[in-house]
Length: 252
Image (cartoon, rainbow, N blue to C red; front, top):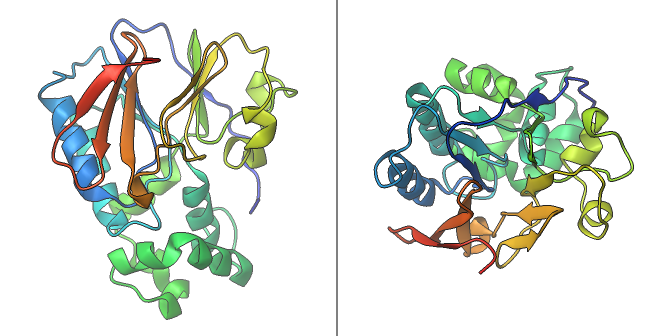
């Protein structure tokens, strides 16, 4: 949808530290800040650890611009952090004309999918959407343009929506990695890696080893922001409007 990107996935070398993956945020800055403080302090995040955000930082929630500021600040302290693109950043790319000339259809689709709230967080009304790209802070423009399609490790894949079980792991198309649901969710795959994904909101973490680990737990709908630590198989969650992180064992 809205064009295609043939950029290959990031290949992650074997990790010496922990792997954290963070699910969909959707403009919910307050809960994200709780989680980032936890990573910085209680989790004692170090240079050998890797944090991967699965996309959908924007839209629907109240402060998408603030979320991007917080993520840029976090990356300045932990430069190895990986930020994937979600389907909502894909909407923004098309509406802003980052990859091709913006067109009215893409802009209308974005507005209907939460783009109004994102524009508002930048102080822009929906009637001024054609000026959005020009009014973006340069640091935000660079952040959106730098987002990665998906990342492959020795025993895992991190991707926004999922993978097509019938396609080669290295050539998954955009309409799959940003948008797929049932063909990925309902069928096993032969990648021999755990696929960590967001996109499809669940009430609780979806853990179907050895195939899938879904960590979009619907924060923007009043549920929770979820982060998993794969190395020690832990789950960390911030409930909507909460000021604390609750941890549990993955699969418990």
